[in-house]
Image 1 (cartoon, rainbow, N blue to C red):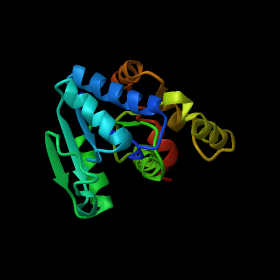
Image 2 (cartoon, helix red, strand yellow; image 1 turned 180 degrees about the vertical axis):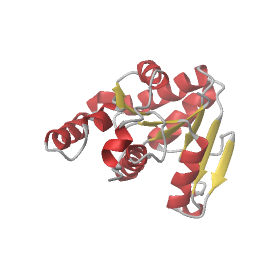
Image 3 (cartoon, one colour; image 1 turned 120 degrees about the horizontal axis):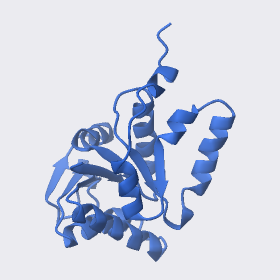
Length: 193
């Protein structure tokens, strides 16, 4: 695996453990020779994951829209910055550049990116692994909601099981590396009769 997209928050007003975990994720990716693709920001977890990867000698590609490509928001120490015209184009470009996806803690943007990626997998648009880095057990309520959706029949078990979740970067990378796409899962959703 050469390239992993990281979705995460850009807020600086978060617990220091989140920032440290994001930096550790960046370092772990770089140590494995995996290129980081992310939203191009320099603040919050976005900046921390990029800094961690660059400090460890890794390659980092940012993908950003013009209104965010400012001195206050855009990271200037990346390997490359791709500027796309819209948020839709930004997400498509990140998907195009990546072989797997990791969501660190974040807000609405992170949730949007994560769920679009899961939905694309569920409907057969890609077969790439998706994981959550569950720092400070941030994703526990979301996972509980997803498990509730499984119990209520809105999400199939095999689609839930395809989402990997770990609290340590190395463990999450191991889980993504061992991922095997369930080719039958998409058939549950995309019936042809």
